[in-house]
Length: 426
Image (cartoon, rainbow, N blue to C red):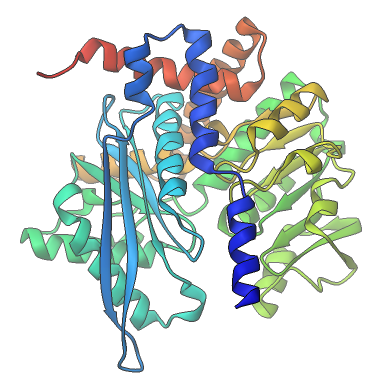
């Protein structure tokens, strides 16, 4: 009981992600001089759905899981956002992620709104059969509010193409016809887009390259570290090293490592797949997560969960550039410290928008019944996200603010314009 109480206290001590999101919105609203009514509308999710999911487990018992789907704003297009499976999922987290998704699609200038979903569960301790039954139950529960022109989910933490295939099949069965455009991040055989599996990491690399140019960082001589060596983090490392930077440290849920000699990103991934963790990679030393974040590198990419960079950690960060592959990894107070210390942060709603950009391209291909090559998809991704970077950088320069505030000014500004132009019905 004591251990559970301590864990609960630790959870309560964590910053509330939705409060962080609202604070970021407040700052942007001041720069944009938003009308109070518009500000209130943008601070309120349009729809919040909580569902109970009875699932028959492999041992014959029935467990009831809790799932969420928050649809934040659709002024610029259908709701769009991933679904995550994690024991730490909360409604406030999902609300925050749906808000950030709204600004992210706006910054990327694609015709979507923002949404997010999640189930409180630990997929690492569930069989494939249990995950499938839970997923199908969740898909049936949210089916009335999703659809190709309503809300298009996608993968997120601990969900993947197979998860999306189960949702597609469940939704299509309920509708009575195959509807591939209802979801993105699908297997290629079911209408998924080439290049989607590495889109988040690849897009983050394109923003890092742009950031290096404006900060005069020589990528061929640069070093970097990645916190969170999952799908996005490992792809980011694999692609970024082709531009010259050397990987010097990484982490996953089981620990962090650094090395005095460059780490081959592909070999590190192979080691993780074989052993279950980056820890123990030949030639590396195990360090604390804080030591990894404060390691002596030029580029740092937090690619794990939100609230990874707190004020105490931010004070000791030595990287020149931070590229946020994760959603909400830096708290507002930590942001202020990083900006004061001259760290150039490429914010999450810009840095990791590659996934939603290629999801948009997948959706378009499904609606039009066409397909593009991987080269074509990657080329469109690079043009779209690099253009977004320059829009954000221009806004930050114009207002004399950091890149996160610049991104919020761009993203919130476009949504606010749409809301204002649409008016209030009735």
